[in-house]
Image (cartoon, rainbow, N blue to C red; front, side):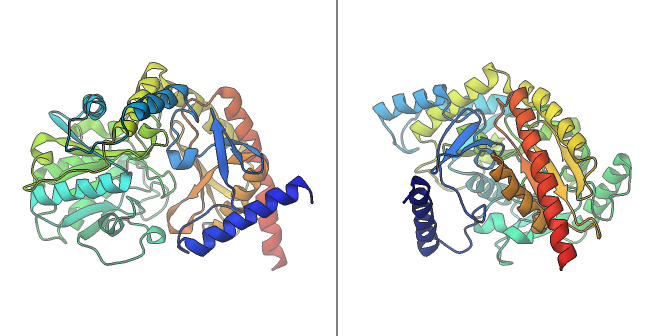
Length: 448
């Protein structure tokens, strides 16, 4: 038996064990799922020894680089002292990181609560907003995604990720998250913003007069890296302020400079000031489990009961997050995301210009989406997206997938330290994958 047979058998055994013990609804990429065993920089290796250029970073989580020495050192040194204490005790690494995040948030008199995930962060933000406003009514964006908890699912405007209609919240959905589809797609940017503001005003007339908050991703992540024109949420904020409604910005995917132009996604919409509440997660931990909420003190302190976090603010995760943030700021990885991301998106637009299965290449910084369609109908093509995902992996590139309930968008979000040479390499692999997969998809449709 060859070594490849041994590796293949081990892979098949692990996949079978996964299927036998884990839920059916736990999504796994690829017809033949891979086990990633280690990584370095912008590359990872699987259990069979294959090397991949990583353009997805564990769902936008490996923000700086795999096996970043500063983060590894911080984790090792902290682990040698103590792993866990809980928030019942003073935690120096948590205070250090909270101070940095509060200062960077742009929110005046900010308070920070640290969680273990973006889902938990958004759940906490909803608790704060509904308590502060004494209302369970929430405004959310169509095509949105905010996590997998009961309350986060209840405000997710994407049926592909919302398994139940039951919810502790009354959610009202407004237009604006998707620029190039829907009833306002043909309008100019200014007209689009006016139409969405009018829709917001109309939606508020459907409620009971005391809406708690609007929660929105500045760029929708799972929704396919869609975004409104700059300034939409500033225009929304003028309406919200008249009604006393809070603005929650979900920065789980857009935070920490990924968009290149801004450190936070909300800063593209800052004409009416900073948000009331900001949620973060993913990239700050570079793989460690960190999330959090930043809010004005009067909002954060509105809870009338005690609370703690057993694992949020763990000394080891806080040490990692602080080291990662220091590296990000000192190396100006936001600037790198702007420069290299700008080159990458133009390279991908050029590569896709002659492909009739590509509807749009969009994005900002190192947050880029390629929307695929059926050339004959213009309908979303989840089959095409899946085929390109497979072909890219065969070529040595890992990317993601999303785009509303149709999952027809390729999601490209490498670590922010991506080099120009790696961007070019990834674009070449992806161009070849697109041409191969879309041709195969067309052939399959013709045969049927």
